[in-house]
Length: 590
Image 1 (cartoon, rainbow, N blue to C red):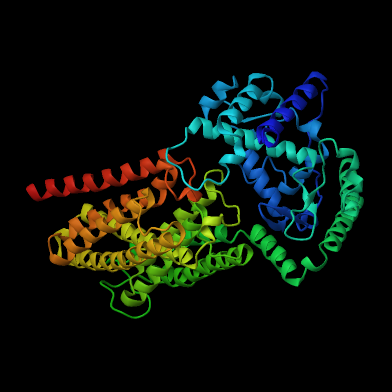
Image 2: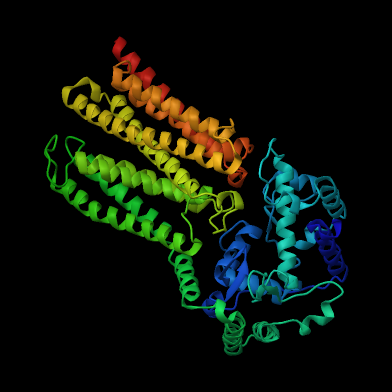
């Protein structure tokens, strides 16, 4: 069993690196081929992560995993992965392998001020391979940890970073050796063959199926190193023909459409376009409200609380169609991702963030058709822009890659309904958070001191109440559906798992707030304040269980990072509420 441990492969790679270093060969740093097109190579099908995808997606995933960035120093991801294989010696002294934690750098005796390191630097200290061996012995290898069903204790963050580092180096070595290039089709369900072949059978590589594919790739690698773009493009076309010929009946118009759809998704960046447009819309809606004498503007019908200026109306009229265009790009991205993955897009943190952003816009549109109040769009477009920017700016923490479902998620139709319902409730609560913050701002500005201001606050309170009702109904339904799925999958309706517990806590918290408002126990200011404070329960149920606790049966959602940013957000919101409450109290005492 130990012979199959990834750590042993890792150690072999380490000794290979040390051997390279001992040669003391000075190599020029690889540089991108100026003016070359890698679009055709990006369209080549490859099997990775349990599915067939375009090489463009594969390269993007690898570059993100190894460097922590979507793109690295101006390299096209496709060319960068190609260069790693074609010119491995040139990359031995280049710093591109990410290490995020300072304590890990300290343990490996590396420069703590650097964020990326070369393969040479990582193996100058021989104890790194020894540490890898000890980790493999203690844990039974990484493979035993790959897809856990349950976790009873939170893993040490430093060991997690070391594990990620070993994975990065192992993946890089697999790229260099050709073992990661699964481009030779085989009849399903067998996995595709790789370009490389290690071990005692390496001499028999030409006897394996797929020789035309290997030959075409050798041709394009040689052309790349030679610097001949014409021969390189010819090699790509040969590789594409060879791969599709090997796929035989498996390659059909549907497969081709999926590859094309994924390439469109990668190159269009629909969510990025959406957040840029949302940001513009947020500015336009805010300008419209700011320029309006009343602070609230109705666009199509309904009564203004006060006459709006012409500029305010123009801003609102420009923002309205642009808001729906932005939403259209987001919906298009969601539908593309659904088509590519063959499942609803709510199975990891990245997808749930996008879904919550969409839900926030959906609920604001529903409420807008009821109230025709532009402040709803000012809030929802701001929230959606911020949320999508966060997901776009932290790909190393919030992985945007499309992965197949782990077995526990494939087991029941009700699971997808459960997850989509729960996350839609988070969207409704996010909208209450935004409206609550704006309401508190009105209190800070003394709007509660006059009748017109109190009308605005009352309207905002009503919008908060309606959005919270949506959220409570959806969270209750989602929790019950989760119990149905749990009974089907694990044989019990409820097990006090941290995810279940925090969903229940969030539901009970919002039920208390909404009940207090309904009975009159909570005044308008208190309702606005608690609509903000209660969102911390959603933060814990959504983010905290996965990124902070990291324990329980919902192990498929666990990750690390972002704790300080989330803590600043939560503490900032608390300080905002308390500060306004104190200011309001002082004003009433005067």
